[in-house]
Image (cartoon, rainbow, N blue to C red; front, side, top):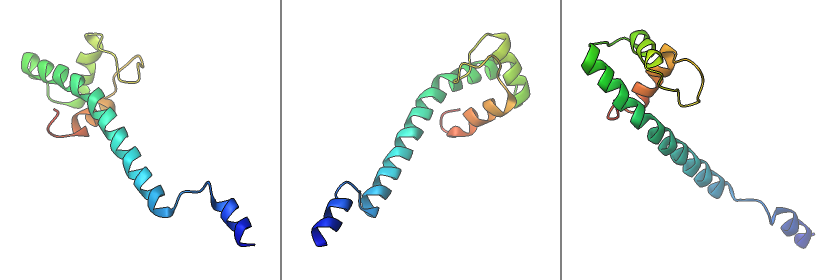
Length: 93
């Protein structure tokens, strides 16, 4: 019975390792999102400096006019996408 239990659990991660894996996955996703947001933030800063635009709606409209693609390569920037990028990390934008 003991060997059978060992065999059935042999491929399973301990709860501690599962939690470590989740933390590492979240960190990796955050790093990837930061890397995507960084160049967009520089474009947003450029737009703000050139035009004085501040609202998410105005910035989204300007990004669309300039043909700057969204991270997901969708056709149009939405105000919520601009907000998410700008709030991603206060030090980025």
